[in-house]
Image 1 (cartoon, rainbow, N blue to C red):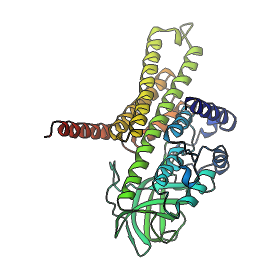
Image 2: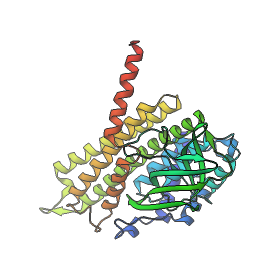
Image 3: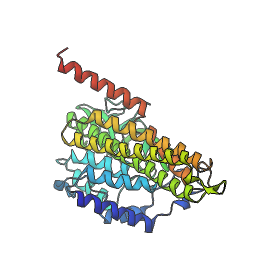
Length: 369
């Protein structure tokens, strides 16, 4: 398994070195970015988009571990493609819907890059878990509102959580369906949208999932997304440190490279240690999820990796002479990506509160209180 992950990491590094130029994003602050479809289909041809899909619906049978390795590498290069939102999370949801008649077609479209899928689940600010939505399915049509939907401007299909007669359900909606309006905002290096559904028809004539299986699938998608996002944030932090180390070796002050100053060296070592600990946290969360009990570890990983990415961003800006938020260097692009990842799928504060609730509940259960 280690050989596979190393091959994926090397393959992604080579692909990005030859096909992606971060400097082309300079001067585009505050602009939503539409997905590069040609690049996305190339990723599909490489087999990266269906890593989390099970074999019964045509997937590779790998999983979240391999997808997270790619997410880490994408973070290291500040890659703009919404891999976590439109590959990892939909794959995790579809893995729980293998028995649905729609699942195989959706999986095929996802993994070859022909169609882009995005999950629309959140309705309130600070919402961490998939609960009972207010969006409603009635007679094959949905009405309601979803917020912070990633890559909706690039999506072909939306996986939408709704409430139906059987409880919570997940339905498929065409992104250009009549009655659906979208308000796009720049979010890091991508786009987040508010969607308004007004009597919008669903595809397939029936829900993809209903009841407890729908809730389980939504939670699995959120957990998978948070682990992969934590890996991506750790990659962003590592990329920031790499660029900072390159810079301090050539930036001369007082007739010496500033990288020779002990204060700079200590700061870089501290960042390196923090990045290694962040990597250990999301790998631990992966291990716990594979054992069936990883929600607390997922929150811990998301909180730690988001904080480390932010810290590396602040330090990188200072060691670059405060140029990071200008377009003179690409550090600002990393920082904006880290800012978005900090809050998406839950901020460190909210995840630490969630971690404490889960730990306290576990202690009470141990002592039968």
